[in-house]
Length: 232
Image (cartoon, rainbow, N blue to C red):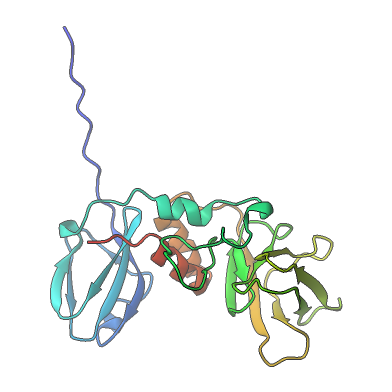
């Protein structure tokens, strides 16, 4: 006699706020947990992004919303693409579109690539495997990586024309907690970057979001939210 085995329904996880703006932003700070049946009350001008079950949902404008009434969980393909540690040879022109991009300027395709044009704290898995990314690949370009508060001199990172990635010199890896200026030497366009190196990379979007929030890695949090957005 055959016995049918019924799969248990997926239990919805609490959501976590990854972005909030507008009049009600103070009620929904980044990092706040929202239960599946909690009422979300927004006003005109509000935008709230919540990560739940592997996908982010964006709620806009006046209204009362409940996560349990939103779409089912995402397939996590955007999360997988964003967190896969690619081989450097794959990041060439034409292969660096961000998750969901259909045209226009390329966006950073990996959570683990450091955009040389964007300041902020970065959470990375390995100080000896830091890759720098640029959106404009038309010409050769060399960036100076200058550490503040350390005795070592500048380290150069060079991009070849047509390529989006450069590797940080493994003989002079970045040091956690120190500020680095990334730029073309003396230009005012240099950006300041700090690094946090993770003991282990969280396996789920929710756990990773919590880690990014705890360490102030807001640039990557925005990447994560964009890559996992679910279309309602």
